[in-house]
Each structure stands twice: as structure tokens, then as C-alpha cells.
Image (cartoon, rainbow, N blue to C red; front, top):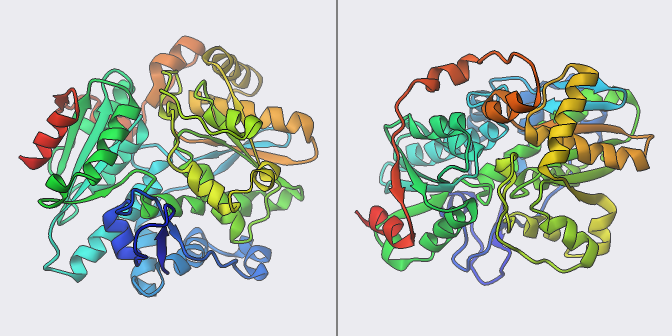
Length: 432
């Protein structure tokens, strides 16, 4: 598979270079040259396939010629070592739980897949210089990347996160591992962290001394594997006999973009809903046709506090930059913190299910869509375990939430983070 830059001013590359570079020299995101639909028989018989078999068939074309089939199967088996259940909470509404992995967030899949790919590349080329993975996080990405890359040979990880803008548990997950993982606590918001990462990739003084890549969803090895669990959900919902709608809590839009790639592979989907918090850039774009990034607003669903979602350009490319065609397949709705809290209370009162703030936003978007299209079956994504947002959940819901072992093991560890205020300090750290 060949990958090209969406800015169109950089050479085409293979999988390994696209993963190691993260972002193209012209600042563009890499995109696969072709997305070949899977045979219809794959979806007709998907109930008979295991999750590993589904994932292998779905991603094989994207790594073709670089990772042999048997090695790819080993990577997938390692990555998909936990469950992805669809839990029905109301008639015609289910939630896809993506929090059963090691850091209890949906990003475990992409982070682990990318880490295993870099580990594979390193093992194949003993002369390969060490890679420094840079990642900006608004919440769960940092912990998932830290855990996924921990002790991976030939890889150092530097995580930037905004001070006071991630939950205590999220902070513990990305600041307590040590080894090859370093956390930088940035005096700012997520957009500042993301801007620093993007600037570093274009800074010749840094790139001449360190080989950099990114583990945000801008990296194809982080982004593409997220299509797996949409296929797993389709497998579980197929027997409903209704058209399927996915509502995805969206911040940087990598997750919903991966779902749309699954659709391009042939997965039957009636519609996608990008459910967002007060950072309403995409809903406004779909209304006006004008894309206007703006500074992010802090909310209780902090992992979605993004004012310029990087992956939306990939979504536009999937629809050939045709707004009318995109609007037929994608809706996007914005919700306030108060609406989110009310949704959390409603879900718990009516069903007994405890949703985290991000899942609650996904639920609201799905309900809005199904009110207009009641004949569909809807799935909203629960992207993180509610225990990761205890201060918010405890304020809203009167329920006892037990601490899972994945969280318990980091709760009492000591935070290790380096405080930085600006890009110059970040650059000095990288050069040192």
C-alpha cells in the first residue's frame, strides 16, 4: 500500500515511512492510495468469524508488502486481547464498550497496534536509529500510548498534556510509568500541546538530531486500526435486521473517520453522527460550509476539547471534498455540559447504566438522530470507563463505582512530569 500526503506536496511513501514520519514533510496527513472494498461474502458471513479474523481481513491491504501475514496475525492477537461488547440499554439503542483494555479507553487498540508495528520495524532493521514518539493528549491518548509503548525497544515516548485539563486518573496513567516514557505538563490547553508537536516536526534543528513520529490519531498506524471495533459492533448488531447508525463522541475525529473507512470497506451503515461538546467546529461547518477552527473550550468531556480537529480533512477526502455527499452520511450535534449531565442522569435513572461524560454526549447525538429516523438501530460508543471521570460522575450520579484493577494499580504511584510553558522550553528538552 502506498500512502500520500493530503497536502499533495510530498513524495508518496510506504507503510513504514508513513508510520515513522507520522506527518508528511509538507505538513499533510498521510492517506492510503486506495481503499479496496472487501468481498460481500465477508459481511454476509461475519458472524462466523472471530474478532482476530475480522481484523486481519480488514487491515491486510493497508500493510500489504511490509508486514507478512503471520507477523500481522501475531500483532493482532496481541492487540485484541480484550472484549468489545455491545450492551443494549434501550429498545433499538446499544452502547459499544471500548474500555476493557489496559488503560480502559478506546485508544488502547490504535496505540498498541502502532507500538507493535514500530517494534516490528525495529526488529527487522537493527541499524535503525531510535525513534522519538511525540504525542499531545487531551485525556486518554496519553495513557494508552504510554502503556502501549512501554519498554518497546528503540522507541522513546514524550507526552504533552495540558495542566489541570485531564482527570486525576488520566494524569496518573501517563505520568507514572517511567522507563522510556516522559510526560511534559504544559501550561495551556490541548491545542497548545498539539501545536507544539506539529511545530517540532517541522523544526529542522530538532529533526536533524532526532527521528520523530507522532502517536496521535494523525498517525495512520494509530488511526486505521480503530475501524476494527466498528466491524465487531456490526457483527453483534447484524441480527437486529435494521439499518445501523453509529454515534461517535468526537474530538480529533480520528475514531469516527476510522468508522467511515470501515464503511468504505463495505460495512453496511445508514448514517454516522459526530457528537461533540461545546467545541462545535464541525456542526457549524456542516451548516455553513465554512470551516472555522477556534480556540478549544474546556468541558467535562475533556478528551473532546479540540478546536481544530486534525482528522476532519481525512473525512472530507473520503467523500472527495463534496459537502453534499458528506452531509448525506454524517450529521453532527453539539451539547453543553448541562445537557451532558442531564443525559448521564437520565441513562442511569431509566436503565441503571453508568455512562461517562463522553458516552453521554454520544447518547444525546444518537437520540437526536433516531427521533428523526426511528426505524434504525443505533449504537453509541462508550469510549472510556466512567471511573476515569469520577469527580464528574460522582457529582451527577448517586452510585458506587468500583475501581477496576487497571486503574487501581496506578492510583498510588508517584507522578513524574516536567513542567513547560512554551515551545522554546519544549524544543530545549528535545535537543537536550
